[in-house]
Structures are given as structure tokens and as C-alpha cells.
Image 1 (cartoon, rainbow, N blue to C red):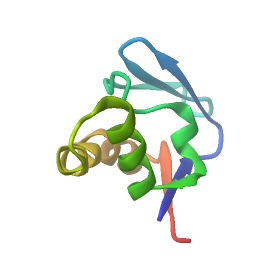
Image 2 (cartoon, helix red, strand yellow):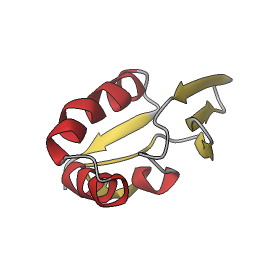
Image 3 (cartoon, rainbow, N blue to C red):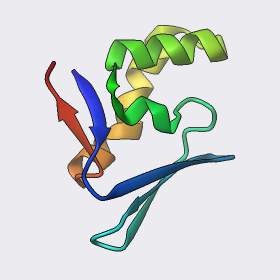
Length: 88
């Protein structure tokens, strides 16, 4: 499964994490992910496992911790239709 940005959503990297802007609804969502997540993770090509492996390699954080923490960072975005789950 991959995640991609929903239509009319923009994302940019900030020092504290990611800022998502929903153009049609004029809403902003903040994800305090530090250096874990990057806009590229939501281009529709990254799987959950791929994101976990990327974060683990860059941060030396054990994959088990990332697997538990990552859904906390993304679930609200999915619920608010900022990102979309896609089945490969």
C-alpha cells in the first residue's frame, strides 16, 4: 500500500516537520515529524515499509519504533483526506 497527496493538496518541508495545505478548503495541517518524513514520501511510490526503512537508515531509529509511531503521524492526514491510501 502506498500513500499519495489528495487532489489539490500541497506539502512542504519545514524545520519541525511537514506543512500540508488544502487549496480547495483553505486548511493547513502540521505534522511534527522532524526529519522523519519528507514530501517525497507522499508521491504515491513509497510503501509503508519503504518509508520505515528510509527513516531507519537516516535516523538510526529501530524500525519497530518507527512502525509504531508512523501511523500516529499519518492517520489524521488520512482521516482528513489530506493523503490517500492506495492499494498497489
